[in-house]
Image 1 (cartoon, rainbow, N blue to C red):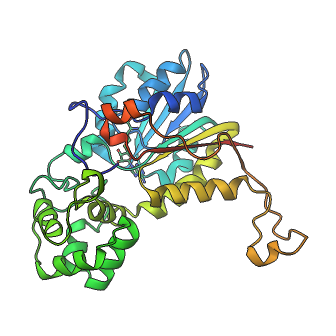
Image 2 (cartoon, rainbow, N blue to C red):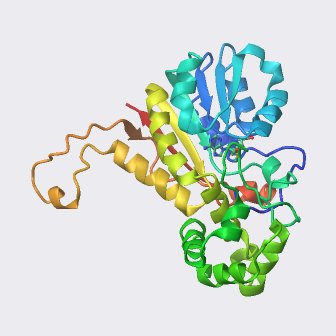
Length: 317
Ligand SMILES: C[S@@+](CC[C@H](N)C(=O)[O-])C[C@H]1O[C@@H](n2cnc3c(N)ncnc32)[C@H](O)[C@@H]1O
């Protein structure tokens, strides 16, 4: 989600587009569901309620603190829930290990949770002088401080442009390099603000750069591509895949993945001109809705963190 520290409920992450998620998953009592980004268990809890009696949920999260928080929130569901601290690139292995596949539905609610944004010492929020970490899991070697303080200016600018869709990327990279060493998230945000005026719709000037750093630190785009493939593999026939993304780079990956998976021909542009398909591609998904769903105006007003959400759904065939 965006690195905005606002939100409606200070105690836990407000699940985004909850009723749309439940509708899209067409939850059935006794069904088996995978929440690949369980976070604080907001969606998971509602899925378990809708799937009772007999429903089961496997929840995965790369962040051990998210798993600890979901454990508390989902305690009442006892053995109907299994929570695993793992990256979703491993979801197929995890689902097989715990005997969950094939699934009736998989949810991927991408990005960061309110818990992560608000937690000190992680550096996701630009409003506090926290260390520049931004790792979902401390297993990763690369953190945001290493990128900010050691990457060559050109590489840093490219990264901010590519993962942040940031037009001022060159100016920001140059200011970062000039001000090294950068100690904390707040200092970084101030450096960015000094060379970039406030963004559109009152979005903080540092939002896109922070997003870019987080994506790079956690290798999020590669993880998403692998995770989407695995989601298809763990679904049973007719099972539903629901993905919520929070920025255009993520959404493009999801949209292109679904577009390819639903096609019966993925011949490249040249061979498409030929009347005969040579790729023999077999579709693995069918579309459920055209395009993406977005949150209602009232949800965005109640929970500003939902404002950039896009929900896409597809069915396993
Ligand atoms: C927007 S939050 C999910 C919130 C959750 N749906 C809820 O209702 O509480 C996204 C979560 O995905 C996790 N995450 C992001 N990338 C991941 C990955 N590659 N593997 C596993 N978890 C990941 C983050 O740690 C974060 O907890």
